[in-house]
Each structure stands twice: as C-alpha cells, then as structure tokens.
Length: 412
Image 1 (spheres, one colour):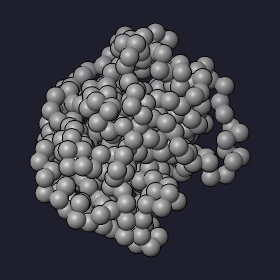
Image 2 (spheres, one colour):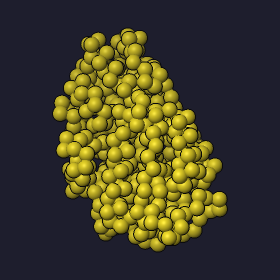
Image 3 (cartoon, rainbow, N blue to C red):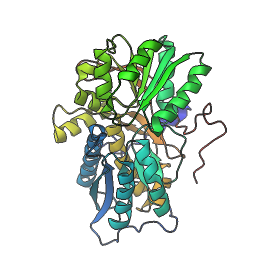
Image 4 (cartoon, helix red, strand yellow):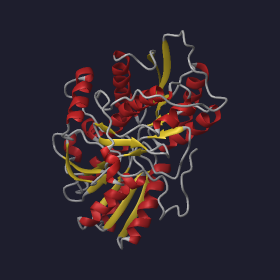
C-alpha cells in the first residue's frame, strides 16, 4: 500500500476506538428499506449474534462491544439527530436461525442496518436475505474470502490479512511441515484450500488435513493422525468450544503447545479466558487486533469496555471489529446524510483513514477493511505477546490468486 495514504488521517473527535466523520454524501437505489420518518426520535439497528449454543463462547462479547459503541454513539447525540435503538436477536449458533432472524429484523423490525454473524456458514445463510431486501450487514469476523457482495461490509480480515501472513511468519520460523485442523464448514475448508496452495508454492509440506463437526468434542482419531504425521506446527481453524476439547485431549496425549506449536485463527483473548489460559498458553494466534496493543486509542477502548462490563473483562479482535462497525456505520450515515443502505455503503468506502484501537484503518472500495496483521503468542495470564506485525495496513483482497485465479471483486 502506498504510504501517502497514511498521511491523510482525519481530525475527527476520537471515541473509544473509532473517530466518526460528519461529512455529507450521496443517493440511494430503489426498493431499499425506508429510512425512519423525520419526526421519529429513534432509528432501529439489528444486533444478531449467537447468544446460545457452541458459538456463544465467542459471540456474546462481540454483542457487548457492539452495545458499547451504540451507547457511546447515543451519548454523543446519536445518528443524524436520532437515538440508535438496538434490536437484539439470538442466532443460536444455527445458520438457518441467523437467516430467519435477519429477515425478521429487516421486515418486521424495520432496522436501518444489521451488525452480526461469526461463522461463514451464518454469513452465507444471511447473504440472500440481505441481497433480496437490499439491506446492509456489517460482518466483524475474519473469513475465507471468495465472496464479495454490495450488501455486506466485511470488516474482518481477508485471507491475505490473516492466514497468509501467519503462514509466511511460520515459514520464517522454520515451521514448514504443517498439519491443517478445522471445523467442518466453509471457512476452515476454504482457508485450508488457500493455505495448501501457498504451502506448496513455498516448498513446504502438508502433513495432514482433518475436520470435525462444528461443536465436535472427540479428537482421539485426529490426535492419533497428528502423532503419526509428526508436523512442525498445527494450523487450527476449529471454531467455538471444540477448541476446549482439542487442547485438553492433545495435552493429555503429550502434545501441549509447548511441545507441538499451534497457530489458531479463532482463538483470541476471550476464548482463552473462557477455556482457561493455562490450557493454551504458548500457542500462537494471528489477528488484526490484540488487547495488548500499546496505543492511546486502544487503551481508551479497553478502559471503556471494562468500565461497562467488568474490570477483568478480556477484549479481542472480533469485539474490536464489532465496535468499529457501529462507528463506521454512524460516520457513513453522517457522510451520506441518509440511513438508506445504498447511500451508507457508498459513503463508508469514501471515509478517510482513522486511527483506531486496531491501528490505522479504512474501508476500501470492495467494502472490506485495510488493516494491520499481527501474530501473537498466548501468555499464562491470557494476554497475547505480539511477536510480529505487518509494516503497514494491508489492502483487503477477497480473492487469493493462487486459489481463485482470475477472480476479482467488482462492487458499484
């Protein structure tokens, strides 16, 4: 990325993690959900996360960070002079329920936008709903790419901003024989498809590849195969509380992270705390935010969250993205002068660089986020020690050219 862009930092008043723009903006496409009437005091937004089920371990706190942003937004005057009224729904770790609740929020509750989702299965279940009703979903979690929709703002990492930098780091450290382990759904399988292409190109070895059902708890067969394969490192795309079972069973089998390194893509501070940090201490993770980032913006974000949810609360990457999404939506609403989804998404891609809790960020024209990549190692206290970061925010690229040659993202 050209460094000249980094000089265009805005002077907006900094909230906890994102500075909200107040510029003016543009028009909308037909057949979109109506904006709230000028005389109504509030605008409704949907907050849709798994509050129950296997993914609740990860998603409840993203909901909390989203609510923190909404509370701060309302305290500062709301959006276009209206208070923001959250309508909270539980996706219950079930893609079909995510789809149903998304339609309910749009059709019945008449929300202006929706914040939510975690698994790619939940996002893909919701996507046809948002495309049918021309509404707008803000999706806060890293994903596998190979998707580009004008009805989704993808703030989570693209593959070139998380899994590929993590692989490059592993190769630099001499970890060249890699075992791929994941939950059996679209993100792990597509992420591993991309990883295999890059492993082969870099003259590494795929030691094995195994999947378990989302929420699965029996890893006896997988652990036997890992022992037989003798990898240098495991690349872990398990999601939810399956991670608890895997790390417990691997440690019991004589393979704690101190003996067999693990690089995870869905274990962050929140999951480590819920699992017990001692269980996963010494393992690695790749994200675009760690709670330990030593910047004024991040310290302000951490302090604000802990003031609301407890002094010992852990913060992580999807939580930071969930918070940023609300503030970016509000900035885009102000820039557009409208709540209409089409006007908001176009305005979001025109927002200037912001100095956030994650570092410098900006939405690109493909509705994904420029952001910095980090690799960290989990310490016994549940914090990540940052071992490496990219030199600059990485341009988001939904289509890895080794895995999906010739494909590109075209959003108008």
